[in-house]
Length: 275
Ligand code: AMP
Ligand code: FE
Ligand code: FE
Ligand code: ZN
Image 1: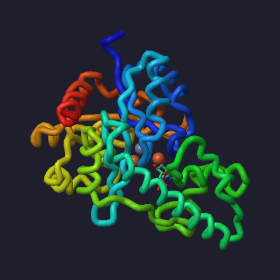
Image 2: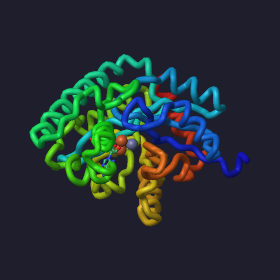
Image 3: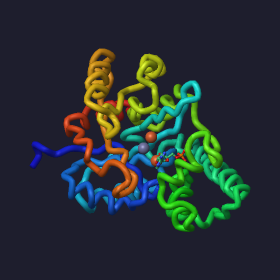
Image 4: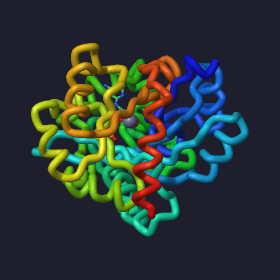
């Protein structure tokens, strides 16, 4: 069994815009032969104890992590902090970002209202999460019968620049990298291939990036090969994950088949950082 074990270092839970609890995620990980799981919620390390307990109870290794929403020249750049320390003194900075997400959600609800669509904050069932995201709103719109599915919600209303869209607070890329490291984790550029950032990788490295999420469901073979070569040439660590949010909605847990041997270098770097 050990030979074909893989890991998944990028999934979302009810602590941000995913639809499953940590317990359900850990259970699914076992079904899919995933031996280590990083539940990297958006801009939040909330639920760290719950995630750890869920993974422990299913015999899956838990990697504490978070996905930070950052920007580079107006483009989204998501930085993962893997093997982060949930008790880090910097966790307060994440709470500020989450508070801003709530403010932003209220603004988006006002925009919907002006279009004659009435949804209130309590209609967004955000569970344990402080990190309101557009998927919460999209699901509420489906429940209210405003749209048929999430695609329609994003396509008609919520997409970047769409009629209901309000920008969220995003850290400048270099600040995101430094926060990821201050949290004690390895700073990894998520889904580098889907945000139009491939020509700017040197700028991330100059800002202190530790590694790149090479394995991601939206990366084709060519992107993976060129990112692997880039990591080799710049001595960057390699990571991978499914970016799973919800069953049937994008890639499933473990689908990126990220090799287990990538885990130790990430762990060692983060351990050295925590000193
Ligand atoms: P936010 O962080 O609130 O800006 O929302 C971004 C999140 O929305 C992403 O992390 C995805 O989970 C989700 N998302 C973005 N675009 C789409 C889409 N077209 N369909 C479904 N979910 C999407
Ligand atoms: Fe998301
Ligand atoms: Fe992301
Ligand atoms: Zn993600």
